[in-house]
Amino acid sequence: MPTREDYLRQPLERRLARLAGTADELTETTRNRSAAQLAGRPETASWSATEIICHLRDVEELFRIRFHTILALDDPQILTFGAEPAALAAWGIGGPIGHPLDPDRWAEERQYARNDPSQALSAFRRHRAETVALLESLTAAQWQRGGIHLRLGRLTLGDWVASLAAHDDNHLAQLERALEGRG
Image (cartoon, rainbow, N blue to C red; front, side):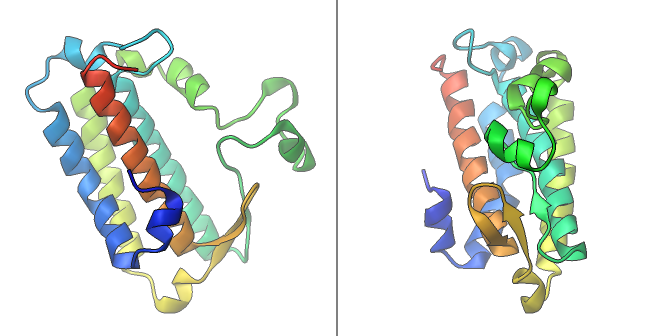
């Protein structure tokens, strides 16, 4: 499975192709699966296929907001998953409510397990098409715009796309494991 670093070594077109193909891969992987199969968790602490699709849908919106923010502002700080409490505190966030971008918290509060997987996948497909259309419209200069990642520092839009492509691959593999009954 390619990592962010692997995608950074690939041409931008390859990264965009990864993004453009994810919805079709999700559709193919979940085709002819029952609602019970999609809702089944392989382990208590692991997500079901439905929950993974919901996560991808919600992260897609988050990344599109990040992309628009980077295009609108000069080197904005971008809140990311997995930020340490000290880094969050430096931004004046976190504290008693914790990290605002907590995937497990999202899954619980947004009731991913109760979502209709076909509706979640349709929403993901629509959001991803909008993201790809935005990215395909960018000029060479716009691709060099960046945002400040809490741990990695300044990342260009191309770098952020590499992160999203690797994120897709990670969760496609996780979805396949979930459908096979492996965590």
